[in-house]
Length: 141
Image (cartoon, rainbow, N blue to C red):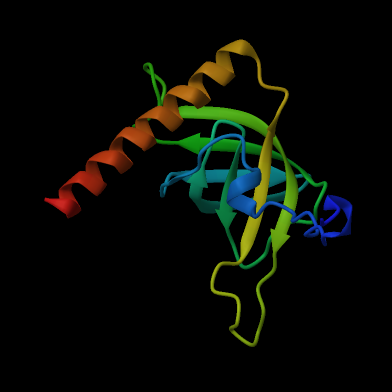
């Protein structure tokens, strides 16, 4: 008879990036202006979720950098086409001269969302998800 404790136990695995995410991410190309101190930059979001974004850039800011984000999109709810949020850089995928990094940029988590701004972000994400779903349906047809 085999004792269960004699069997090797597999080492616990760290979940992959997509397995760790609480909120689904959606591909998009919404423009964003961001500022940190005296640095002002313009970029496009590569993807968005209810809690954060990935900004594709060859010059990502350092982890921990606080950013003021300004989104301009006709996909924003209401009369305004602008949404301003605070965010913090939580991870960086740096650009490499060797070219072995095809997706440089930074992950930014939204900070200090009020009930109103959270509702706007959720509405924007739902709109992007709806448009993403429509694009998928068209390519399958």
